[in-house]
Image (cartoon, rainbow, N blue to C red; front, top):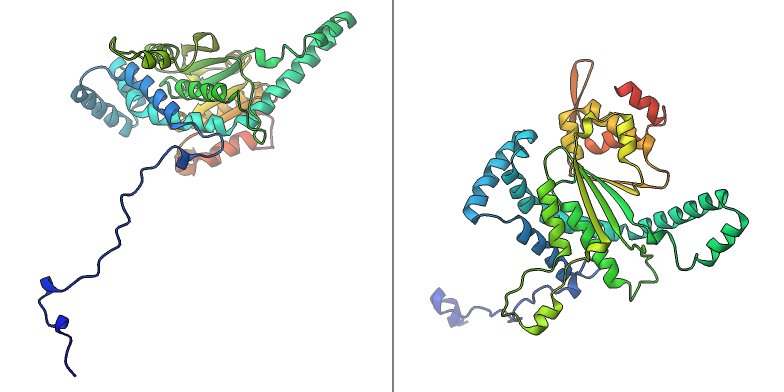
Length: 353
């Protein structure tokens, strides 16, 4: 039986099976990323632009050199040095805060139903308190204006512990902008909080004042446009948020040195307290002082308010008991501190001192 000639032809002359040309792989689009409460890509880019304009000072080579110094101090867990210079703070915010800000914006968007419940409960409590001290005529007058004036007319107060690097500020700005953009076409299946204003209070041990101010200005100020920009571009050039709906203030303070009275004063009017990528740093400094801080938060936070902790899932902290050191998952330490039923928070806080 004669052999097929193709079997003895040189390899370079044999016909190889051709792959079907499927055309270019389509690039991902915003529609492809769509999910419930998703922050639009165009808004994400606007938030990134805030960091680009506020924090990128100096040449790329200079910023890279500074970042290498900061990375070295962070690797050695020398946080005091890593956050000890203004140029270090600006470089840190430019490098690590933008991606976190996008993540935080999405987290708050996903938590919108819970925050909507918080505002509803806040409104009910406020009306109940007012009715207890009001006369009958005052109550009647109050009910006449109830439809036009609710708790949403008051700002949502958010306390950001360790929030000096600005990721929380920009992320919250993105979330509020997303809510305002969607106000005209609300999703009936997903309750959205009706927020007229955000009041953000950041506390950190380093001097983040200038970074926070620059980012705040970047949020409430339209981006720079060339004088040669088209009329359409100028008309579309708007700030992320108007200044009257977004207030930011900052105070430099060491959270681990605060006593119970200081924590209580700090929490006045706070609806949401955030500890984002800060808890591991606090535990690394002092486990006992960090637990005391968490006990104080538990004892002083207003009923119905929210505590939001975001950190690396694989973080561990070393605890020394009876002279022996043992590593525990940070999540376990947090749950053990906040959820232990044996003692109330004030008693546990006194024991931790």
